[in-house]
Image (cartoon, rainbow, N blue to C red; front, side, top):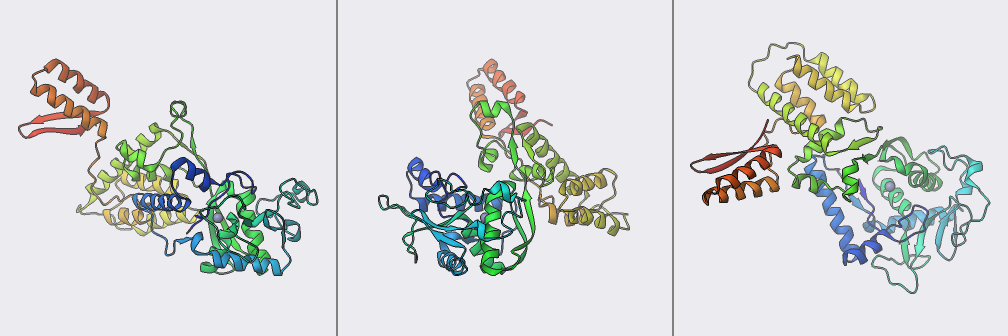
Length: 391
Ligand SMILES: [Zn+2]
């Protein structure tokens, strides 16, 4: 897995403002601090989502040397040209440019001069961009062509080929990267080596934010952290993702996340209930094969998850096999989880307790009803109060 932590432009077309430099003025931090911050957040989220850490997690800023030598190789083979903006890849020189996205050659407008600082063809892209003389960047490096920074696409090609070789089997990424980013990765890598870059591309569809209420309230940027603050288990989000195939868009709403949370809790309780129970199921290999068949069918996780549910409901699975399935699903189904109570509920419960101590029974009951409306119940005992989720 790689982190492309060199600043990137807000557009794929080598124009627009630099995202890191933009964030720099917004967040009043250096580009290095911002890259560090989001890298750390990304790693924390991966951990919370119970993702298996990659063997290598490399950063583009640690591989400038490799990127420069890849550009040099392309230069040697005649794929590059320089202009006032930087060093560009000449896409007309690669005969099958655009094959991944099935870009039509006639639509690529080869030979038509475009207005982007002397770019020869619309699809040509920057390998190395020069820093402006008037503006000192946080991230810039010396190169044989001048001080500047690498293009986004070259970062991925250089790191992937360093660790996986000139050719490798599987490359993942978002579906939005097909027409430009991955198309250009192929162009650079195959231009430099003359070998096939990647055998299989796995492109993930989008997570779609459709909830009108949310977009209206301006909440169109949701982080995993904001979900946990609302009391959701990060793995409820993982469960939600498992309900759609990676090639299908997935709608995000709080209702769908609620059902994912309920589904996860129920699944966990059912499986924990199987623990220690003597099973009279003799042939586990048949359904284990069925599970594996779904996974091998282009990672059909929704089917695999549905199979687990069916087996549980038909009382046809034992604890051991269920946990074996979970080594793929990654939902920590063997761990008893204490449900996190949202901060808002804790605050209300504290308020109710204070009102009771002041003998303001009526007001306390109003708060209790408010808590119940949000799906929780407060139980009083000698040692204080306890919040429970209404089931
Ligand atoms: Zn990439």
